Length: 192
Image 1 (cartoon, rainbow, N blue to C red):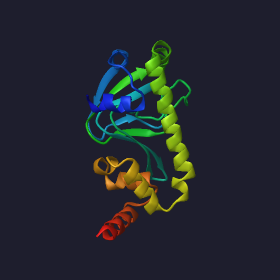
Image 2: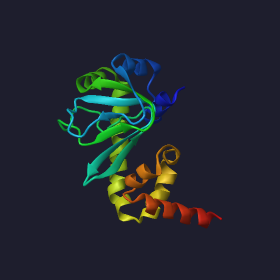
Image 3: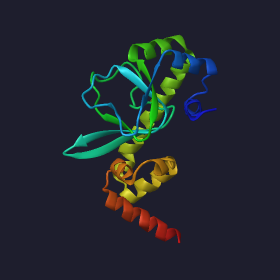
Image 4: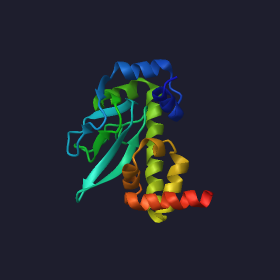
């Protein structure tokens, strides 16, 4: 089983037929590393699911990038899957390695949700998962020191630390790369 299918099934056990339906309703696009897939302000009428690769969503404020989201295979490039969404993208999305992306019109995703109960349940549980992540960020991560945020990240998304650059991880943790280096050094020294 590939990582795309495995990650989708980690949310809800969809059948091979449901995954085939998802592929048949999509268009596959490939992007090189460093490509901008979505720009802030773009019309937001599509759903993007990462088939292969790795990407990040970010905003640029006052000349600084703040990473708000990372996507692995089987995950959307944006947190929004349904038809209720802003008319334009609120974030930029770039590939952090060569990536292939399934692209669906929002109306097509809504049709799939109505037509296929497995995909509908997957979408609902995925939305619940991301809502919980957002709630934890607001109620926990924003209220604890950066070193604790880093430890939570190590525990909850360890693969991120192997795939993302120090700069991107730091921006996700809302700290500078220099602060992250000091935190990592302190943690390594405690383990000795």
